[in-house]
Structure formats: C-alpha cells, structure tokens
Length: 387
Image (tube, rainbow, N blue to C red; front, side, top):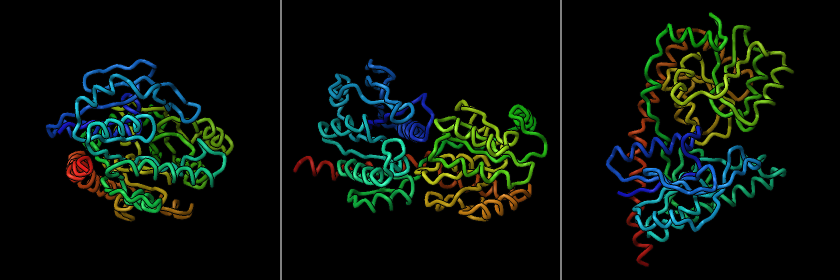
C-alpha cells in the first residue's frame, strides 16, 4: 500500500505528534508498505530528501511557539505526490499540511484519514482573549476539519467523546498511540543512575517527582509547585523540558521559596529521555489537556508509578492503587505521595505499570490498528469516487 502521512511537525522537533508520526512511519515501513512524508521546511525553500517532501513555510511563532504556515498551496512537489497516487492519505495536523492532504486525497481519489492530536479548547489562550469565544471557535474548527475526512483516529475515549459532542458524524476510531518500548524497558545500571542523579543535584534519600514535557500554561505545572511546600523536605520536583511558560514557573518557584527543591533540567536529547524517567522515583502530571498521554505511557514503560491529576485520557492507563494514584485535590495528591513514599510500594506499582504499558501500547499493536482503519476506508472511498 502507498501511504502518505502529512504533518506540520517532523524531526528534529520533539513533541507528541512527531513521536506518533515517526513510530507509525517506521511501523508501516516494517510491515512492507511504501510510506512518504509531507511536512514543512524551516524556510521558504521546498525540497525532497529521500521519502520526505519539505514544503516552504514561514514562521508564525507569535501565534504558537515554533509554529509555521505554508508559503503557497500550488507547489510543484505537491503535484509529484498527486502523480505518485497514494492509496491512503493520513493527515496529522489541522493547519498548513491539512490543505495539502485534502487536495492530494481528492485528486488521487483515495481516502483521507485524520488523527486528532490536540484539544483546541485547552489552547484558546494562544489565539483568543475571550475564553467562551475561543471554545466556540475551537469546536467549529474541529467540526470543519473532521467533516472533510473519511475517518478520524483519536488516541483516547476522552477525545472520541469530545468530538461526538461536537456533532461530528464521520467514523471515529480510538487507537492508542504506540510506543517503541526498547529504550524504556531496558534497565538503567544502578551506578549510572547514581551518577545522573548527582549531576541533576539529587542527593541520596531524595524522592524525585519527575515531569517530562513542555513547560506550557495548559500543562498546569504551577499546581505541582503549589503542592510542593506541603510535602516532606526530601521531595524534589524534576522538570525535564522547556517551553513558553518556563520564566513564569521559575518566578513562582522564587515566590514560594522552594528554589532548592525544584530542578529545571532543560530539554533532554531524544536518546536520553528514557534515562531521565529512570532517575526519577514517581511520574507526576497535573495536566488536563492531554490527548494521547504519551509521557504517561513512557513513564509506565520505564517502570515508574504514576501520581497524576484525574483525567478521562487516563482511563485504562492509570489504574488506581495498581500502578499509581489519581488525584483531584491536594489532599488526594498528598495521600498518594505518602503511599508511594514506601520503596516497596513504588517497586510493585512500577512493575505493574511497566507490564501494562508493554501489553497495551506497543508500536506493533498501534500499526496494526491504524492499518485496519485504512482497510476499512478503502472500499468506502472508491464508492464515493465512482458516484
């Protein structure tokens, strides 16, 4: 099968969309399919490199950090992809590359599948000063995008239910994002773990609560900072990543007087991310804006128990008192932390987390389920073209 994946984000950018795209790309190629990628270049120049087509774009970071918009729609390299005649076009983003995906699918007579990665209602602060108007626009925009596809893939039931509430009638299939487990399952030698912890400023006896991801407003990291003064003195918060909200978080740390208990490590190289999970003791998150929850799955695969704000995206992922604890109040957070302060409890729940991650979220399972969506859409697309 000839499969075109379109995405506004691609390597070397590090985010959940890119992780999902690269895992799918590798899985499809491993299954013998001919896969090409269409994405945006970092300047106005369009070019092709092996199986990846880069379309010229302009930066619009004023709207969203690192965001880019296509420079033009009628690019000769887009026509080359139309002439290639893909069997399926699978779009991963709703903006610039979606317009290419729609055109290529239409002119090739093939189905257009779309994966919905982003809950735009949680990002209204980037594009609308009025929350109510922002939510209205987000719902209308999501409905508009979905209405032009043959099927929508979502990573969790939370997102499926949300899209149904938007009155979207296209088929919606829940396919949890897959993860290449190898680096996360591999144990970190104790001596290396000790060296890494010391390099980060963690001392013997410290209990490291680890968050890995973007430092952005919608991640609600400030909530974790507010809880920290009420935790035992040996508790440290390790924040791995960077983002537009870092300066405000650093200011909050100073205001709370907890500078000695919070570690901003900055961005981690992709090949070292698994090690950063393993130097921690508990994975924490206060986010309610997740769609696929990749960091939760990575943490579980690394053998960390979870202590996270309750959210529908965690249904079937976080099993309370089995592989961690979910909280809605500070009291529940502190109770979960108290239980996980016991080393044996952490080991038991970490082992349960790792087993669950391996069983449910492998890249192989992800690829099989996405391929089934493609197969289900092929007859329907051909019938529509004939009509």
